Length: 358
Picture (spheres, rainbow, N blue to C red):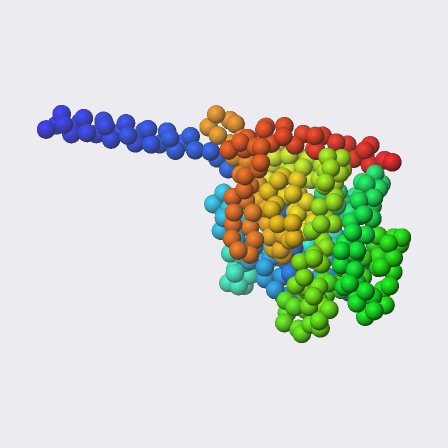
């Protein structure tokens, strides 16, 4: 009987050791980067000086997203959320800065309960760092690049002319109602379309908050032929040269952040829809040509390390309907980091200081 018990104990020890060994072979999460579109915002009051700020709905979206990140990555962060392990980088727009602050607050929500504040343990907000617009070629893509602007303007002229001609009947009504007759002049500058874009944005916002719309405003909201923005944004990355100039800096930012020796566990970029949209188009994972990512949408890339030291990426997209695991076309499953770098090397290997020159 004692021999049987001894054999059973040995077998149990072997099984436990094997299971424990297998556990150590599971890939380890090393670092995460998240690009998030700011929350719901008010429409711009001036299309020449856009400054629409977060609505209360947008503020809640961003705070809730911070809580979501805490739930998803709290264990990975050892439930310690500080600027030593978390970075929040924003464009210099008010709506993205506010979004970053609210995400940070939600991420560390459990650290500043009232009882703790009463004891003098004050909540220290995450520092949200910003990139000045004149040098931002990553988050707001507002840095001047003459070569890129020349390429886009050439495409923009054709796109706007075709868009107006395809919807000429509507734009005659629009000009009669608003006085913007220049929009019908195909020899005028392409930005003649701006008053329509501004008008459409206001109509969409009014529709979302339940305000009544007149017939023309209603048409701008529901007519699929009048969807303008996604097609225009897609012009920015419809060639390899444009991708290098426009998306190259973001690809380099993400790659270099993962390659850094002292990388943080969680890096958050508080950004705009055009950046997320064109980045996902470049990756080959955006499918809807009539939509851009909604307010509060987020694209996450997670860096894992296998027991043998290899690193691979997992991409996740979150919107208001769910969370989806993405597969990058051309990158195997798992998508090894080295393969990803090789696949997009022609985009990220550019030098904007040189290539932006005319």
